[in-house]
Length: 184
Length: 187
Image (cartoon, each protein chain N blue to C red):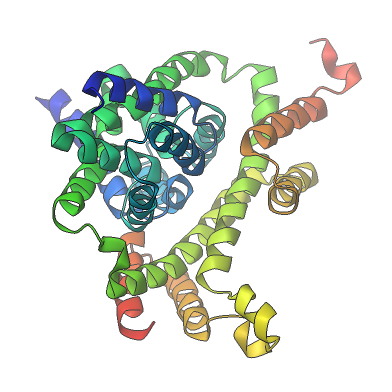
């Protein structure tokens, strides 16, 4: 029974995350950080960033990848299934209902107005999330430089996320493995 | 009419080749679904708009929607499973081995750089939402007037939310709900 409750909790936590996040995987970060790292200490903020990095460079939708990862680390394969089903269930319910009854949902004026307000809040939440994650990931001037370079590569030169993931990992290895410290 | 089985595999393919987020998934769906003429382009873009305006990952919303349109409720569930299954398999394999390799020096070194790069990418997402939500650069370019550079009501909401979210440790969903109410009343 307690095992069942643990799976139910995993499902429920991710169900809620799926139900309240607008704008895709990255917009989920503030909620994940609060619900998983701060409130429950299921994972650390650093682990969350690791999962995003892995989610970004592996097949699939990033939010789902992060959910699967957290679920597996909590309760193995069954945990992964509980979190994955949890995160997609709100989509299935909401979209099915809208497709049945409200085909022009996105054209409704007050829906557009509400979304404009939501977008502003999401911007605030994301900036705070970048701030609190950055305090843990930007630990010296090299990491600050990598972060700024990644930002510019993406915004100015339109470099894809996968390339940034691999380039920053290689840079990390290059910095940590300077020639003389190779043998240990 | 496409069979449910075939539909499942189309979305499995989409899930397997989506690397880097929801927009990639939409491009693949566009190729596969519009290419086969399963849905009219107009309908498809209407679905994209709805998927972006509803909670949940956009790729999952789109999959559910297309599945529902072609095969009803069961179709929506089947396409969602199809989209999610490749992630589930790949991540399970990685998660199984990641724990073992996590403490290796090389992996640690890679993640030292990777965490910083990923934080930079998350900052890009924050920047993009910020520019869409608050700044109105196209209008400014057209009129050349500084007052057109931002939506001032949105900027006000941004400033107030920023201060409140630092002072009050409310759950993000409370701020999201307040943002929606503000939008309906003032925007």
